[in-house]
Length: 427
Ligand SMILES: Nc1ncnc2c1ncn2[C@@H]1O[C@H](COP(=O)(O)OP(=O)(O)O)[C@@H](O)[C@H]1O
Ligand SMILES: [Mg+2]
Image (tube, rainbow, N blue to C red; front, side, top):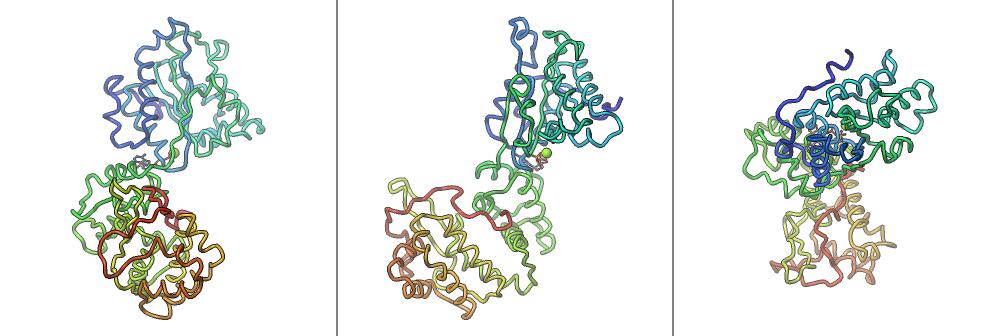
């Protein structure tokens, strides 16, 4: 039987859910749906007695690496129900007809119902173009027939226990799917699994760093702004790379700096910039410069409740920005700066709309001199654009003699998450 190896027999009891899914970090709607499905699977007959047709198909969609396949795999292991699975690609590249394979999958599932059928990368079968190709058309039609569950095609009565088969499928390209396929009655539930938010990223980091030796200073919460558009798979990769980095440096544990180094490396690689060791050291200096305009959350104090809008910026080194940069690093600096300004408050955008040369000027200045102070940057900008200077510089202004918060600026708003530019390698 072709699907014997793709067929998982139950372990544990039906209904033992959630706590067993700790390693899958997804939004509440996923778990609500899982609850709903498991209640049904626990006793499908009670629905049939009332003439109710339960959910047939569930579509998981979203960007790659967000945990769709992981969710299905975990469901297979933990649901306590039989599970038949395949990937869409398998249907297009085998000698056996795709339609026969679909029928076989459903037949195994129905014989073991209640059961799940999972097809990953469903766009290979149910993509909009599938029906144009005669061979793929047959596969598509077999799938539709199985989902519709009519007796002539499946040999199974409408309200028999053998209908208690839930079809789950996943795709990164929901927009590619055939509308016939995704209509209600076939696909009744659609779940979008998006990129993880800050809290989920921290949890995912926890999942993937469990069992690894982390130094005490590791604090992933401090890195949420640097991992804004990371998927779960990206975070897993980051932890792995940091582990490799720590071994390379001869550390016994993974330190926070190892993770930061990997992030910096990815940032530069994303730009096609390959650095020598020496340049990498220089890059560290430029990082401080970047941080002036690209505050990381360890430099931004979350405002206290009395004046919730206040932004407080602090520089790593309050007095000097070391900036002995190579042209590549300078380019990085300029781009980072441009992106930050593009994505930050409107007032800054307005201030710079006609003054893009300011950015180049700052980068050049940093290239020529080995060091430049924050006040010098201010002076330069002042000279270039006196009218708009106030607006531009306010978010970054700092009194070097004074510790503590900046004066309150009504026009500035602090949005706790996701206002910071995505790391360059992601774009
Ligand atoms: N939400 C998540 N929670 C925990 N780990 C995740 C998550 N998303 C992705 N991962 C990690 O990345 C790997 C690849 O994700 P995968 O499920 O194949 O993504 P998708 O199918 O959505 O493209 C997973 O095996 C897991 O290690
Ligand atoms: Mg997948």
